[in-house]
Length: 351
Image 1 (cartoon, rainbow, N blue to C red):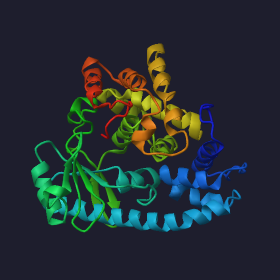
Image 2 (cartoon, rainbow, N blue to C red):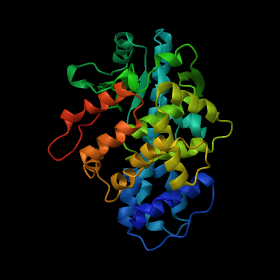
Image 3 (tube, rainbow, N blue to C red):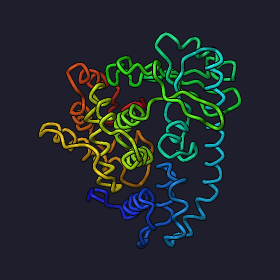
């Protein structure tokens, strides 16, 4: 692992375990670890599907036993979410509402060939601007957002709870809190979606090159505070046939090429992924390095909420790092606009 700043042996070992899993190699021998902390890290970073099969082989049966119940519940949730994504995609298609499945089971299918490989907490869909009302009517027919208490507005999505407690749906009409951060219109996504077969039903989603560029952007907006996002990038770096020149072109077109450079750099240094992008110029490398240097501090144990983890870094360092990734003054201005949302202790409101 290339980041000496990740000091806790449990976190170092977890990252090494993931790298071995991605290489389809035997797990590394386990040093003397705190099984409870390792268990908490696996849960926090949503890595049960990746780590459970390797723990016994690594001589960590107590952690494997502790995870067994978690894994059963996680598998049930992932199957339920894949089923629900399939149902909702079919409902949108029947109502002639253009909607693309984002992240979750769709991305899992694209990257791993298995809709159950990734953990998810909600279902995400992208609709064209102006189509939100039609999409919400379809979702209301399936129990989502039926009362005012079930509807909340995030920076870049409408979050709709379900009357029966199913995982919520996030309905997006843009990728970021402002469209300029990852502009969708030039990509013409609704004219040429990718079509996948999810549990026997055809669904529409992002072309894989766009999905990977967006995954890099999305992970960066959260400072890579959960390692399962980085596993997606590491898997993409090893995905046979993925057109990385196409991924890079999407990142350039959306002005997120520095986010992509951070993502593949972390995947290379931490998860032993093959290099897939050329190095940028000196200025770009400085901006990428400044951002990447914060990540080990944010993910350092003990695991905590994303908001608490971000408080480990001063707001000024975080702002400077995000501005360094922004392409152009308009994007930097949006980052600076978040300043009033920092509280006295330096924490940033959830977004």
